[in-house]
Length: 165
Image (cartoon, rainbow, N blue to C red; front, side, top):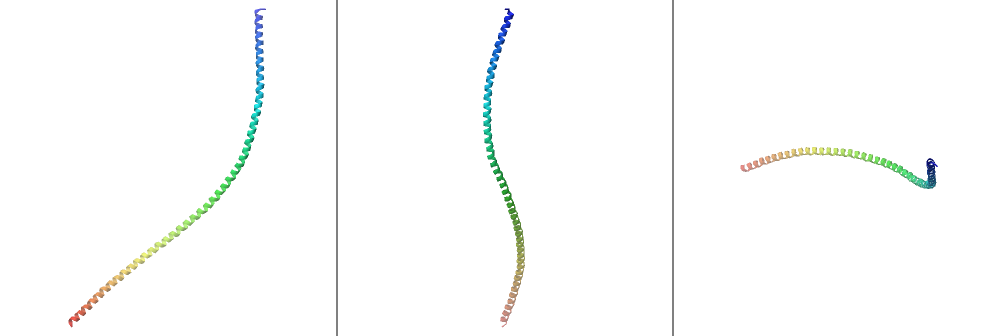
């Protein structure tokens, strides 16, 4: 055997050993892949079961929440109707109060005008009475002066007659 045959024979052995090693690792990897695939299927089934259970619970919660949502919606509608009826009632009451205030204002202004007119009439009556009283007092003072003058004349005449006698 020549060197060339030995090299070829060595390369063949190396190729066979490499091929055997590759076949061995390939088989191990395939076995590992089978195990992983089985574990994956088992895990996927478990996850799907857990997901299905969680989805079922969530659906039940949504059904319960749906009932609560429906009740909340009905409560909101009832509260809205109550607000509208209360607002209507308050609007009516506010309008009544506004009308009563306007009526009170008109009556008060009319009463004040009447009172002002009465005050003015009383002032005019008082001024008129004051003028009449001044005139009367002036007449009385004049009469008193005339009476005093007449009394003095009478006294003077009586004194003059007594002196003559």
